[in-house]
Amino acid sequence: MGQWERGMGRALGIGAGAAVVGAAGAVAAGALLARTAVMPEEPMTPVRITRLRREPGGLIVWLRGIDADLPGRYSLLFDRGAGHARLGPVLARGSDGVAREVIRTDRGELREGTLGRIAGWWYTDAAELGYRTERILYPTDLGEAEAWLVRPRRTRKKRWAIHVHGRGALPEEAIRGVAPLARAGITSLVISYRNDPGAPRGSHGRYGVGIAESRDVDAAVAEAVRRGAERVTLFGWSMGGTACLVAENRGTHRDVIDGLILDSPAVDWASLLRYHAAGRSAPRFVADIGIGMLTRGIVRAGEPGGLAIGGLSAAEFGRELRVPVLIHASEQDTFVPCEGSRQLAAARPDLVQLRLQHRGEHVKLWNAQPEAWERVTERFARALPRPAWRG
Image 1: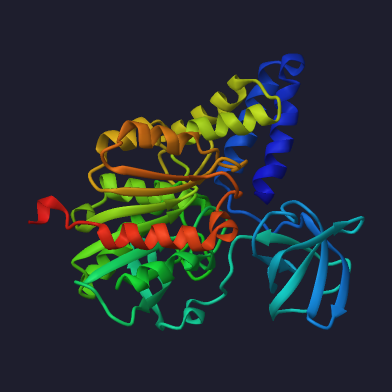
Image 2: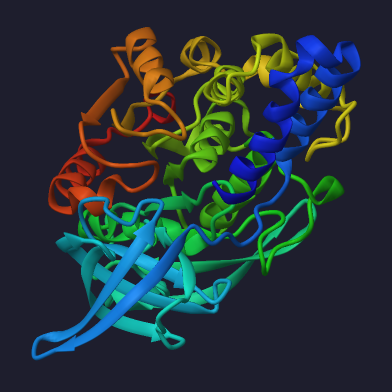
C-alpha cells in the first residue's frame, strides 16, 4: 500500500480541489491516480521501532504505526527490505505503541528508531516448510522467470498448483499457501512474474492489474504440464487473484485448471479505484477519468494498447467461470474491500465458496487465523474434482 497510498494522496488532493481548479485539475488527478495503480511499489516505512527490551523469554519489540496492532503473527520488513524479523501476537499496549515477541530475526539487526512495515509474509524461503524444494526457471513470453518448486512427501494424481503473489509484493508472500496443498499431495510452483526481481521487465516496467501478469501464470501452468502435471490449481493473492481469474477464464492452458484458491482477491478493478478515490473525498469522476486513461492507453500500463478494465468485474468473471473457487476474504480489509468477492460468490453460488472472516487485513487473513485458514484450504484442495471436460 505504500506508493499506492502516497500517490493516491497526491492524486486525490488534486481531485478534491478539482471543482476549483477545473477540468485541468481533474485530468491531472485522474492521470496520477492511473499511474499510481500500475507502478510497481517502492519500499515504504509506516512502522517505527520505539523500544527493544531483552527479557528472560526473549526479545520484545515495541512498535508504533500502520498495522502494528493487528491480531496474529507477522513479518517485520525493515532497512528497506534488507532486514526481516518474525513477530508474535500483541503482548501489551502502552505509550510506546504495542509490544510483540521477536520470534526470529532472519536478516539484519533490529534497532530502536528503525523504520519498517508489517507484512503478512511469514516465510523467507519455501525450503523452510520442510519439503523437497528447488529453484527453477520457467519460460514466459518476455524471457525466463524464477520460481520455487516444492514437492510434497506423497504426490497425488499428478496434481500441481501455481502460487501467485499480489501487487507490490514478492513470491515470499505466497509461501503460506503451500503447506496445506502439500498435505493434500499437490506439487507447487511459487512464481515470480514480470517486474519482480528475478523476472523480466514488463511493458513500460508497469503492472497490467492482472491482465498482463495472467500470461506469466499461463506460462507457469505450461511449465507444470511439461513436468508431468495433469491438473493444475491456481492460488492467487490480491492482484495475483485477478491474474488467476484471467488465466482460468481466458488462458491458453485453461483446460488443465481444476480450481482456484484466492486470498483477498481484486475482483473488480473499476470499483476498487473508485473506492480509493472516495476514501480521499475525491469526486467519482476523477476515478473515472483515471480508468478511462488506463483503458485507452493514455496512461501507460503493462499492456501496450491499454487495460481492458471493464472485463475485470465479478459479473464478467462469473459469466466465464468453469471451475470451483475458494475465496478467503475479510470484512476488515481496508485495501481491497470484500464486496467484489461477495458479488462473485452471489453470481456463481454453484462454483464459488466464500470464506468470509471478520478479522484480518488485506492478504493478512492467514496471520489472524492460520489454523482455520489452512484447514479450509486443504479440505477444498482435496475435494476438487477432475474437470468434467477432461473426462
